[in-house]
Amino acid sequence: MNGLHGIIFTYERRGNLQELGAIRSSASIPFGGRFRAVDFALSNLVNAGTTDVGIILHGHYQSLLDHLGTGKDWDLSRKRGGLRLLPPFNYKGDWGAMPYRGHMEALAGVRSYLEEIRQDYVVMMDGDLVVNLPLADIYENHVKSGADITVVCGSDSFLTEDGTYFQIGEEGRITEVFFNLNAPRGLRGLGTYVVSKKLLLELVDDCTSKDLLSWRGDVLQTRKNELKIQSYIWKGYAAQIRSVQEYYDRSMQLLDPAIREDLFRAERPIRAKNADLSSTYLGADGRCVNSLVGDGCTIEGTVENSILFSGVVVEKGAVVRNCVLFKGSVVRQNAQLSYIITDKDVEVLEGRTLMGHATYPVVLAKGSKV
Image 1 (tube, rainbow, N blue to C red):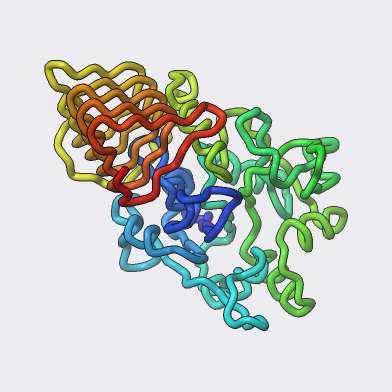
Image 2 (spheres, rainbow, N blue to C red):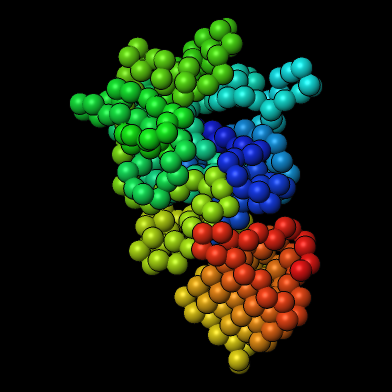
């Protein structure tokens, strides 16, 4: 679909991700045993036929750069267009350079890039949104409706309460925009918007001239009566990762076959970076039940109701239950883990017992030895 251009926003800190967000942006958080959060936004765009995507970086973006590379794994490595990584825009505050404070300020910082966009329409997405959207249908509905802006809203219970909410009137038009609510009402926005390039440039210039920073506050909320803002309601699975608890809960939901079927659709595949690892080895005494396991793992102990990323080792006698283990984690002999999230290259020593709870999962920082 040559008429649609993608812009993905990333964030240095998002909610309360603790150790998970200490070394990476929220868009770079591993998810589902093989993916990073940003893979979903990229795949949504590529599945809709989008060939040009710009990713606006924030802080802690080295992990994201390593993951994305040239964009080859998403068919976005091209001589013209393709994947473009846009450096984080900073303003000069009292204490030195600071990250951008809102979408409109970020867009103003890359205005020259916006001018070079070859397509007539732009879809803006959050990099930490886990969803499989039919963007081609959303784009088609936007054009047919004659809307100035189309907002994608979710109607399921998987979304965090912290976000932007929309009240919808006749024929799907947005009548009210809410955020920072104590009691959420209306439909939760998914941080996905379709707008024409022409209108986006006009909005960026107007907000810049008035020192306005916020897309949802200074555009959607303030101009809801001036602009025709339409809704597109998505009734499938959608999640945004804003805290350790939410990360754990959303990860465990992937063990439900119905949710996996909704998120990973054959007609709209989710692409990921190729790990180039061998198949997973399950030892003679190994046991793996109701779990998602990445490539290159070695399981000689017991794994139940867990998610293992590539290269994880579970030695003989070790028991892993209700855990999420990132790439390269090693669980030594006779160790026992329950409700634990290990970051990359964590080693749990022989005979150790580590336990969290479903309502309080414990995170082990990258490279730690326990």
